[in-house]
Length: 283
Image (cartoon, rainbow, N blue to C red; front, side, top):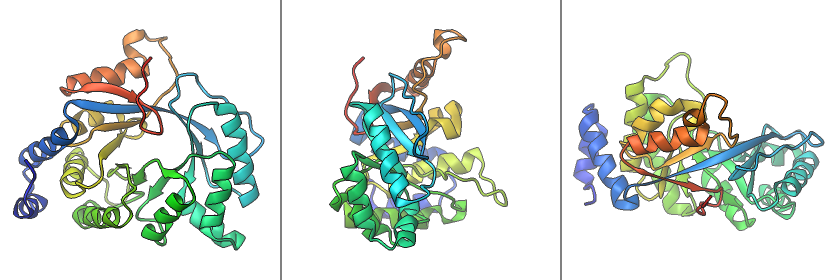
């Protein structure tokens, strides 16, 4: 049952995390049932010429770092795509690509088209609070023939969460191409650190306020299994950045994929592995 505008207004100003979480979980289950997806991401440095090692279990290969130049970004995309085979390759922050296009005196679209021609499938992330022109830049990604792997938040005070999520919902109404939104910040504010309560509330409010984005995502590597498990009970339905390395030196139960599947089941849901295209992976 959809949440009414009146209920949204009340919940957004409420500190009753149990009620907020229950409502968010209702929205989540109405969209996804008990299915929770996760993706195993292999990261590679963005410097061209460096070795490329990709674990066999990777569902997405992500080029990380700020590209030094347009030429090096394109060359690195070619190198990684050649090594990745059929695994989808994502690369770079859209905010960094905005800056690179400006420095190189080219349009963002032309830069994105060159990366797409080099084999890149997805822009790795679009930090909504860092983009110079979120709507236009995300539209350029789509026009260039690329997809956006995830919409993210770089740094955001907890007090501004509701306003930011409303902006994200408005942005999605304009672009309609955002597949997953990760509401928890990539960089923590040292002057105003968040608490577990803040993080859980953010996830729940994101599911309620950004209903037009299919998936609410939590980063396994950045936030850890405990918060990820709680987030899955209050609106999140996708777990990002699971290790692709099958390290069972501490026992099979402690291997990354076993641990994430166990945490998803403890949250009362069913794990479903996917790749960077959001296609299912059956192993």
